[in-house]
Amino acid sequence: MSIVLYRVDERLVHGQVVLGWGSQLLPHRYLVVDDDLAASEWEQDLYRLGTADAELVFATVDAARLVLPEWRADAARSILLTRDIASMLRLARGGLLRGEKVNLGGIHHGPGRLQVLTYLHLTEDDVSGLRALEEEGVEVSARDLPDAHKVPLRTLLP
Amino acid sequence: MASLSRRTLASAFARSFMIQGSWNYQTMLGSGFAFAMLPALRRLFAEDPEAMRDSVRRHLEHFNAHPYLSNVALGAALRLEAEGEDGDTVRRFKTAVRGPLGGLGDALVWAAWLPAVSLAGLSLLWLGAPGWVAVLAFLVIYNAGHIGLRAWGFHAGLQEGSAVGQRLSRASLGNLTARVRAVSAALLGLLVGAVLAGRGGLGAAGPSWGVVAILAFLGGLVIGPRLWRPTAVVLVAAVAFLATWGLMT
Picture (cartoon, rainbow over the protein chains, first blue to last red):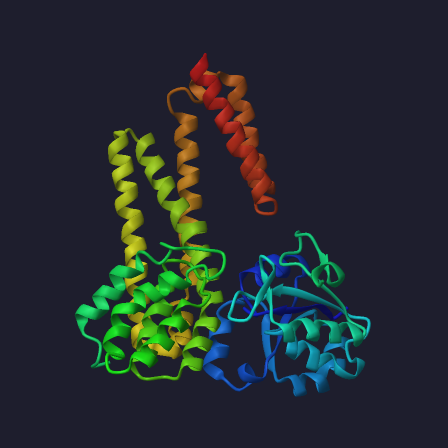
């Protein structure tokens, strides 16, 4: 109940998440799990500009693994975001996200990245990371917006 | 910032108007952003072609935001590059700032400023101004806000660098957006009133339609605050119907 969406999105908190998903899931807070951001105040200031009504919490992956049970038990509804697949995988290690669904939102074009969907460009490491996520008992699928077509991992990867 | 002359900054600002000039799905505003940075990067890295190449590559990467508010990122990126910040910091700044700049800009410009100024132009037309006056007034007012916002953003970015988040938060663009929307709502009300009272409006439609319009208006007052979108649609449709009907008879 209380973590209503796990999402991998390079842009973290932005319009698609706040307006697209936020207006349907009505979260009280966004949990941004990112090692670099957790230590950088000026970056946190910038991301706070994007969420007027909801609380924004920043945590490193290791810290998040410790508080995760608390976040899940909390009555407040949260959307959990990581910037990349590797961070989500580190969070999921040891079956921590077993039975959960992870949504792939946006990973944009970059060197060494192959286009899988218009909003999804993956490296080879990303692909093996996704398979590892599935082995950790996580159901992975891609969908940029709540109204968009949901693409399961099986169709996504060759 | 001694290393960037006024002339170079002016060139970057002028080029920023072309930021959507090579919009594409892979990098969106990326190439436009690099194009605007180019004159400044040429000065900053005149002695070091390799650093210049790295920097241009960095700014060619994916970037997306509202085209006008992108100037905040442009100004700040110019400052970061001029201060010799490392590439990773510049990249992280642009990643963090693009989301809010997109969201704030869409709400302020596309959803508030553009409809408000359009309504002002339509109101002028209804007040009897010639068509070219209404169009000219629209273009002048709209672009005063547009260019003003670009200039403000560029300046704020240059001044604050990566700390521009606090400046943006102090500027409370969200409140500005709400005020512009309130003005739009008032203008829409005036325009509806003008249509109803004007030639081909209620007078021509006859008293029975007048009763319908007044009932629709009262209904809107009661349920409007809760269901403003459907109510507005019904209200506008009713007014449009009455006006057309009045003009045809």
